[in-house]
Image 1 (cartoon, chains in turn yellow, red):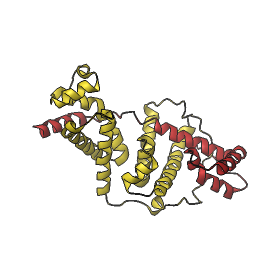
Image 2 (cartoon, chains in turn blue, red; image 1 turned 90 degrees about the vertical axis):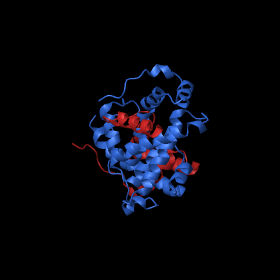
Image 3 (cartoon, one colour; image 1 turned 60 degrees about the horizontal axis):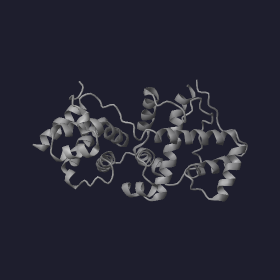
Image 4 (cartoon, chains in turn purple, yellow; image 1 turned 180 degrees about the vertical axis):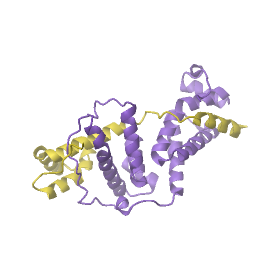
Length: 200
Length: 89
């Protein structure tokens, strides 16, 4: 069932939307959700790898955002602000997980036997590939297949664009651990994508 | 069919050393001397070159996901709106 039908043009700019939210207008809240929930959900799902947990983070993110609206100064865009809240919520959720990692995923040095086996150039060039539904589904599937320790570092560094030290601080890790996990995540994703990329 | 093949360079230990440095190189964090050595190896070893090219392709394509939303599964938007309206009351 599609969501409620509202006129998104009422709040054309972020300033108008923010003013509507501060006046507690129901349509402004619906507009905020329409505009940003798909991005926040994507980010949460990529970090957590579980649709139910991602929905829970989505709800907490918007509840906290609405509660903190008066303190929002607008220095970053609404999207970036919501992203940050969602990331913090997702990381808190991850800390509640029982450890479920393989030892080689947390080894903080790169092992010499981690040499990639597939050495054929892909027939699909990522620089020009259209991010259509099929390719996007492959990317998300490969990401979800990574162990949590690797996936979280990869998402924060590559998709969210945090620096190494920001990622290390967010996860309570050393910078070298972040680099090793990122290295491992990139190589694994490359391997996971190879079959699809070679076949196109 | 998997058309890939395994690393065939005569000095695989050298390839292993290079591959450990590939990420630092891709991130621009490798010293100048090591950069030169790595680039020379990439010029001579098509297997390592292919790994480097596909690795940077992987990084690039995932970075392009950043601002792309996911289609929300059915019902999520309504549940979220209901939840927020309930909390706000």
